[in-house]
Image (cartoon, rainbow, N blue to C red):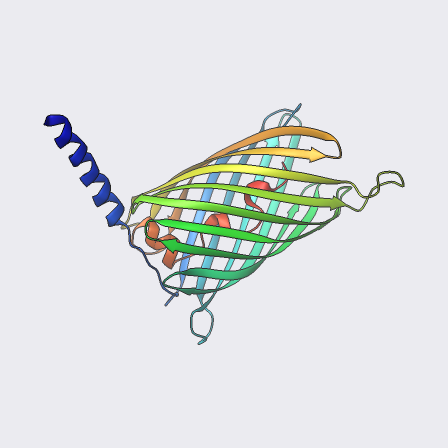
Length: 271
């Protein structure tokens, strides 16, 4: 009897937790914003571990008087360093998206420049759909890079799923793929390029609904292929994020700025 009661009790607790998160969202009715700072480590093959510190933010709001249309602008600064190595990465992007109670769809453009690696611009489309306590996400688009030996064109795709077992905790798993063709090939091989497949798992917990502060951690694993050579690397980061206004984490993700996963290359960026 006690075992049966324990099972029923566990089921009730899980049911109440799942029922706690809102199932729908709406278009923005005012301005929303966020700010992020994080520390991470990148572990490339046959090279020293690279440490990273990032500072960035976004602002979003209704797009004029057009119904359900919204915009977002954002940027970040990333400093990477290791023994006898230092790199600065600047990122600037914008999105326009349509939102209702079932999800969001939109387009974005993102420009990134990195010391000694040139610049990359991605143009893409994205969408997210709400299924109760779950959010499905997808993105894809085109790449254009230059200013370095690996400059050229390519494309990217990605899919992810976020679960809100309680309103202030999001667990996200995703997979991304990117191909960047180089314009510097040779007569035998033609154009060379980098193919990257990335898997990622992330968790974010909003510990203060009144002040909008959350903590997050993310682990990425990359499988890279250059011509016939394969090599793997990984990255880990953790940080603090602030959301303007009160509310739960799922409210901020569905009624505020875009989910951080949706913009740009994310984990599929070349490491």
